[in-house]
Image (cartoon, rainbow, N blue to C red; front, side, top):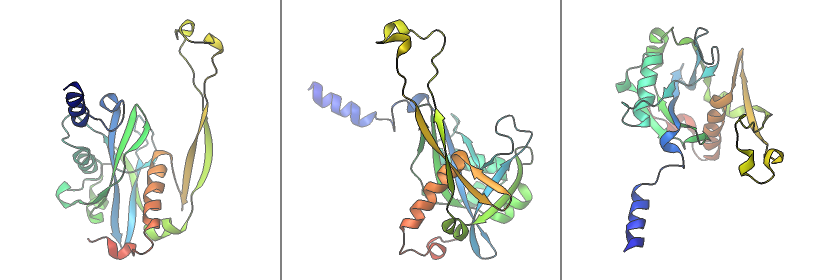
Length: 218
């Protein structure tokens, strides 16, 4: 009886990953737009007046609020707030796998088509400095470059070293993370946006038998 109840509880109450309930959860849209009959991906340049990451290049998106019914609803809301796009006109192509940056931070990406003509006239200049697009074909044929960044553990001054073996001499594991860079004209796409973009492009590249241009309906 106990094991049956335990199995039922585990089946019903599993989170995506340990720590999801308290993690900072955000959602982003990878916006596909038509430019002169060709598919492009649209990017934002964050306004220079923004408190966090001014001038960085990003996808539309942001924190999932308690009022958002789903991550997709959050992506639609943020896209509307930042780009002025009517959520009713956004067409979901496919959600991507969540990007778990750490147990404290997870991003839910969605690939969708939007109406570029809405963006040109309606984007929120308080949050978005400018928008630009990059042809998908160009991205598929240009490899990004990568640099490594070392991440080291730095315990707080009140860390209880007396509770662990080797105390203050404990050998913390250092790790390195990959930072990818896409260079397009005067723009440099890097960081979280580049990692999600690279993942999306790798999926597309694996579909050798599929013509990208004909596989996305307007």
